[in-house]
Length: 401
Image (cartoon, rainbow, N blue to C red; front, side, top):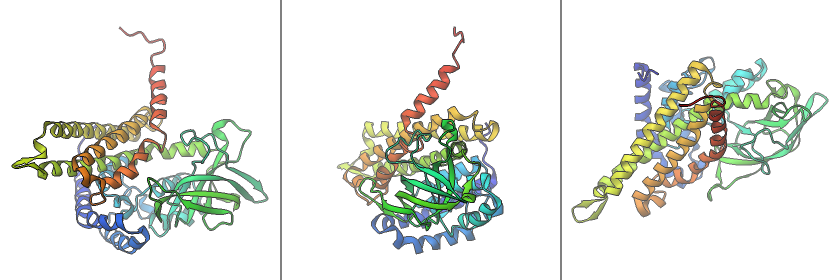
């Protein structure tokens, strides 16, 4: 693997770092203290600035107005943007829109692409992804109660979903629903585009997460589909291929997530080191003089570097040999980086003491909202079991001396 970063990418990263420092981090106190919708006009102004800098939608196709960066380039961009909770949204590469754009571009019909991709990539509309169900394990997407039954030229959808991130204010959802109940477990569900103004699409609530329900993009919705009727032409890809499409989305998506988490690690580490250096604990004595703090800083620095290299290696494998061959590396980074992030945030919060519990720094926000990283896109334990099985299978009939 070549670790050389091109001059073009270095320039992009330098511009992003400067923008995050000067334009986004100063917005964070208001972001954490005020309703999200009240900040949308200010966020839109920042988005206009990003477009003028020609840094908009870094990972999206050039033909739809994006920069068309490859996976490794965008991984580095995602790390830089991850330092602020506003980063990805302001630069137009936020989840779940990023994943929805990828699968629309890969599996959508010409009509679907023409209708949804230009305004979605341009940031004029938002979307959501509706898969997880209240009573069934999100880490096993082949188990699904939501159904889409054909009636004339339409699908009629019934079911209950939750953690449909950013449903509040979204223009459409991509819904996973069972269309072929008699097929094998991996060929039962389909993905269907459902406009959020369709009759029967009901946003029940924004789910409170650690006491915060959020609103607009910064929320997680519970959706009730009650005889929700949409045309069959809204089918995304082939019928029964919902699971296959989801797998196509998850590999690159985990690179995006994991490098965003590395960005969070970097921000938390910077705050921790600065606090340790400046915090007076006795006359002429700073917190950084404590050996336990020095040990935490050394461990976190090593953990972040190791996790970062794992993610870049996984991205390189996806680009060079494909997602299927890189599935072990993709599973490994999911739980390693999530746990690294949780450890670094926790250490940084501890170093800040009582200040860390407040919203006077971004640490409490990260602590609340990023704990879920060890759960969504497959819980840690699921990834550990699946990768262990694949590793052990490689030892069948193998003599080791």
